[in-house]
Image (tube, rainbow, N blue to C red; front, side):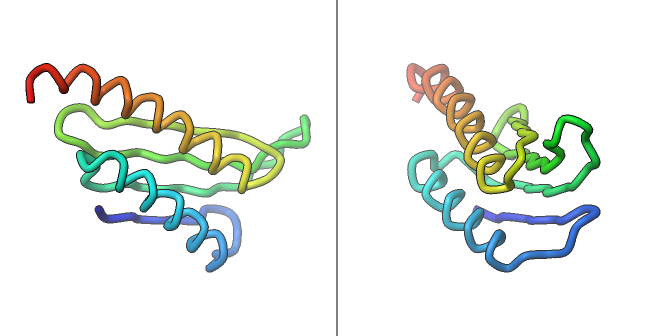
Length: 100
């Protein structure tokens, strides 16, 4: 699995890259159908106090899966995005299972 991490309107962080890579590698062990994941971190000014956005797009055979989270903390945003991806991957896996 290939992971592409980008930072928009914020400085790059090696610690954040390592954290995301570790979490996504654990996800890839569980779902071997993942080919490629694009991760985008961006910072936006939000009057509600949030504005730390993590977007993930997973390439599989078939349509792509997308998850996004806007939180006060990037670690929480990553956790929510991965949880959303995992729900969608489980749904996709259950639909493909009868055909395998």
